Amino acid sequence: YRFHFDDYTVPDLCKIVNIKIKAKGYKMTADAEKNLNAIIDKNTTADLRSKYNGRLTDNLLQWAADCMNQRLDLTASGEQLITLTKDDLSEAIKKFQLARPPQKKDPALLGGEQ
Image (tube, rainbow, N blue to C red; front, side):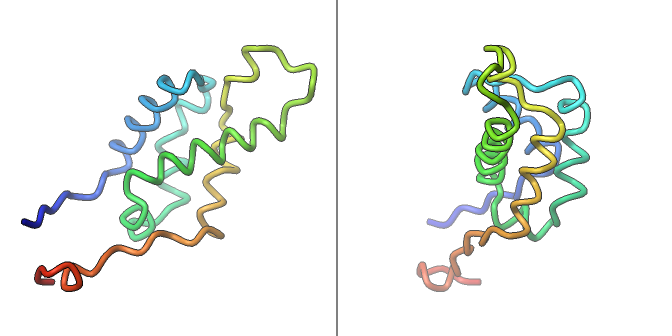
């Protein structure tokens, strides 16, 4: 059997980011929440989103957390240590330009038709 799932839209990806942020115990500033859709939409192409699909959210959150950790110093409060900013997300999304996207499998190689 072969199943086809449509690629996630930018609003879908934003919903997934919000779910994963809560699940991981992180928060976003109001500014980050307000701009999340635009950050993803303006800094990724439809082709890039298709190649990453749901994995885009995992990479974005990991890279945003890395940006947050680099931004904060040793005196950061507990709340600061779990709060992602608009700048964290904006810096993280830029890493997709340098990252090597996953290759979609050719259905013909899996015994299906193209």
